[in-house]
Length: 341
Image 1: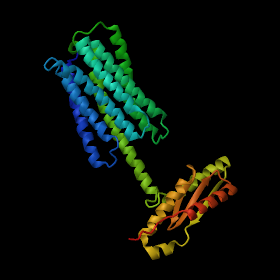
Image 2: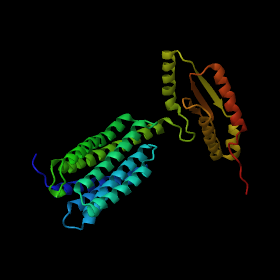
Image 3: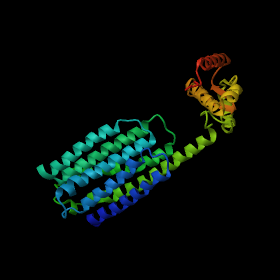
Image 4: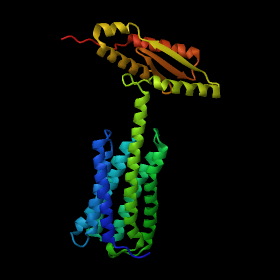
């Protein structure tokens, strides 16, 4: 493979990173759920600045072209993984671990620049940093409890898996390579890091756009099947939920039960206190029902103050106990408190 011009590769990486930063910076203005999007987009700005300083090595102070450049690239990796973790709702201690690791890495970059100058040392540090944070992210992605869309997760994990494979190869090759005198004149495997990074930046941007699209589809579906006021399933979802449970019950010979709930004196609430108070009462009723049922149970708003409760794998005896429990909880609850000035 012919030698590649590292400053040119660094410039191309900067162009791609800045482009992705610009595209993703616009998304929060068009998309209401910005959870994780800002750190994700800022990661590309860090990549762009880091590779820009790296490409100017020899023309700017070593602190900027070596310590700051590598530190910004590592910070970009941390922000990228953290943004994805927040967006996907993954629960882990990534931020604390990665912050400690980032601090240690920056100190090591300074050490291998001034105390014991070593290109190989800096390569080991930055490669090890990305191996750890990518592994932490992939571990959290694979073992999280909530898995709404595994296909999106696979596509998200793909570029990081490719990067991990490359980083392991880079570590092995660097160990077998004599001390590199000038990174700007290094061998093919080090030059490929820029090409791999460009692939990673572009593919990860597409992954985030795919995650946003998937999230929007999920929300639109929930809007179409959920009652906005009470949070219960609406009439549109009723046939689907009931048909699925009937099919499952017939297939596995498992019982299920249905409860019909009608709130007493609700018309008087609307007539005496207004529909706004009535809506508040229905909202509280929906919250009470969902919080006092099992995860597999479904609450459906049949209409007005009438609710239908689906209890999978439930006998008539247990359904009766559940109905009495709900009746007592609602009877003992204060659904609305009038306030007087």
